[in-house]
Amino acid sequence: MSKQCIKAWVSGKVQGVWYRRATQEQALQHGLTGYAKNLPDGRVEVLLCGEEEAVRAVTQWLWQGPPAARVSQVSLEEAAPRDPDAFITL
Image (tube, rainbow, N blue to C red; front, side):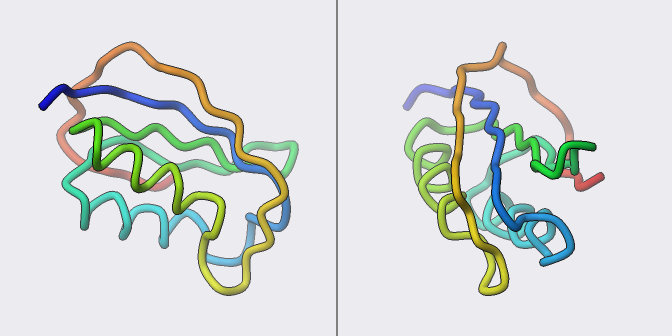
């Protein structure tokens, strides 16, 4: 299997609804590393690194998010491969 990193920007009602924590849980369940952080403009930035199939599964989940979230847009771009030690939320 090949590894990849994807950076995502998630728009909508995604701050103050446990979006980052739920993303962390999804990523850890799929064996991914990366981060999720709030941006000043109300979006959440997510970096997912790991096996291509697992990254794809979590990027699809980003459209759903936790129950209180209302996702309106997810923008994706490939990111330079990284190997952080753990998934963190900021």
